[in-house]
Length: 232
Image (cartoon, rainbow, N blue to C red; front, top):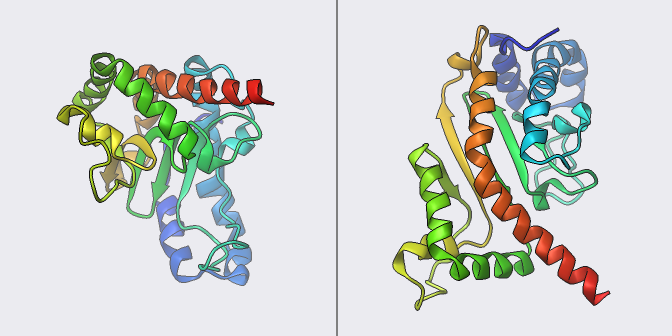
């Protein structure tokens, strides 16, 4: 069965589980979750996988692991609610933590959606290497950043309260004074995701837009891995 869009019931379920975040309620509504949330996301991930592998052939091709689980891991969180009220597709490398993966994602919530790419819990070692790369070729980096911004992407990430790079050119400071980062687009409303929807075609086109900056980020990440291997 091919992907043609989500259902109104998709977002009704995500809305309802926020107010019924209990195992008993979920078990009673498991079939709704599978039919209207999990399965459409898997169909979309399957449809997009070929395009994702064109961006990075090393992405995990497993569809099941490319779609998030609705059950939360609460072992290390203050929030002990067992289920999420949002879901996502994430194209990333095998056997990597989501928080530290250079990932292309598409996320749905009860009342909106977003997509983009980046690392959302970067190590200090990676961020240092990333800043060195930016400063080594500022015009090359700005060309990639501005191409994304012209297409509506914005830089997401926690910023330092004070300027850590007073000597850097002003135009580079927004990209340097972040603790971690990603590039993304956010949308309010979900009507354009409900079948018939063109979101699959849009995401195919957006992956081509993401690819140049993704490749730069991934090359920095690989350089850090290579340096660590040399030290071992």
